Each structure stands twice: as structure tokens, then as C-alpha cells.
Amino acid sequence: QVQLVESGGGLVQPGGSLRLSCAASGIIFSIRAMDWYRQAPGKQRELVATFTDSGTTDYADSVKGRFTVSRDNAKNTVYLQMTSLKSEDTGVYYCNARICPTLFSYQRKSCPDYWGQGTQVTVSS
Image (cartoon, rainbow, N blue to C red):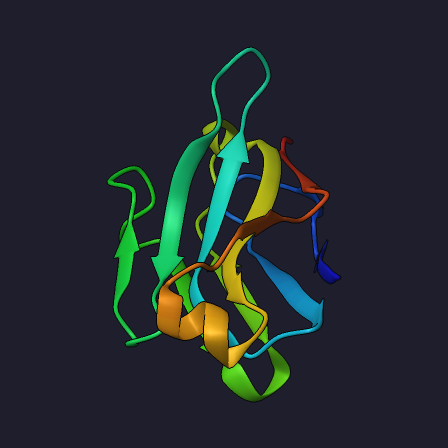
């Protein structure tokens, strides 16, 4: 079994910073992309940032220049450093990872997506 556990959410004032973490555990041979999504109240879940296994990163236009995604492969962990936070950044932040449990699945490119339970980020004065 594979588990993703997020942490680091909380209440922060506009202009403040937070750092989210997402750690994967369980039977893992390789992790492909690790992504951060968020869902604001009444809105659809949206992709915020991506960190691929080749080291490529990408961001939603709304967070470019303010958020930074990083990854520690030795710890199977992805981070999201959020700065200059705005009220519109409020939402539940979810980690998603495409994880290959075995060499066989990696070679076959048959690697399921897993989701964390989410962590609440509230930006408010």
C-alpha cells in the first residue's frame, strides 16, 4: 500500500508564507510526477504546481513567482513553498503522486495516481 501524508497548512495573514510537505510511504520503486492541487470552496480542484521525475517544474499562472515546488527523492517528499499569499490562495491543498510500486510497473508505465488527504490553507487577516 502507498500513503501520501500532507502537512504544513494553517492560517496566515495576506502577504505571509507557508511551507507544505507531502511524504509518500509504502511499497515504492519509483515516483514519477509529484503535484500539488488545491480546491477553494465552491470551485473545482485545480493544478497548482508540478515536479516531474526529470526535474521539470511547472506552475499555474496564478502562483508563478510566488510558489516554489521542490522535491527530496531520498525522502519521497515534495514541498510547496508559498510566499506573498493572497486571500484567493485559500483552499484545501492536495498532494498527488504517480507511484510505481515495482520495477515491472515502472517498465510497463503502469503507475497509479495516489492522493493525500489534503491540508487546509486559510489566508485571512
